[in-house]
Length: 185
Image (cartoon, rainbow, N blue to C red):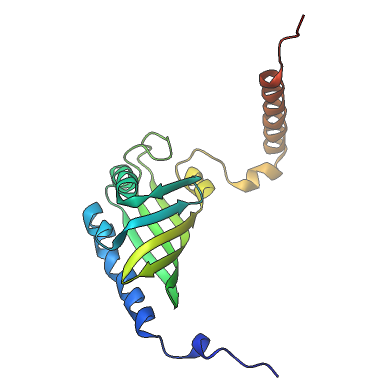
């Protein structure tokens, strides 16, 4: 017989309650595209790890730069948290960002298309402020929503398989050419 951890099913601690309030309160500022309002909920030493884009933003200044780019790309951005779990100083969230792609994002010029970006975050909070946030979102799904990538099912068609084989072959050729060094005399 195993013993269950009382914190798994027990009442939330005051720290967990405060952390859940913070992650709920910050949504208002996200949905108004108010970078300074979002940043007011962050510790000065905030670290964001953006897994999908392979970027880390350290401190409020770097996060601010990213937020301005995101809000410019999606001026009608809506951030919805659909599920959250608090445990100690951590809050895990499942979320969606929705909006119209009206400016550059991930190096992609505006497409004018509506996108829905599902993602998840693991945030750490101290004294009611975010100190770190590791977040993951479906980058390939974003490209599909922007009509820049076909659905994965296309790879199961003869034309899709042919295009993949061609792409892989061209990639190998390009790498081989880039790695060639001139012969030494």
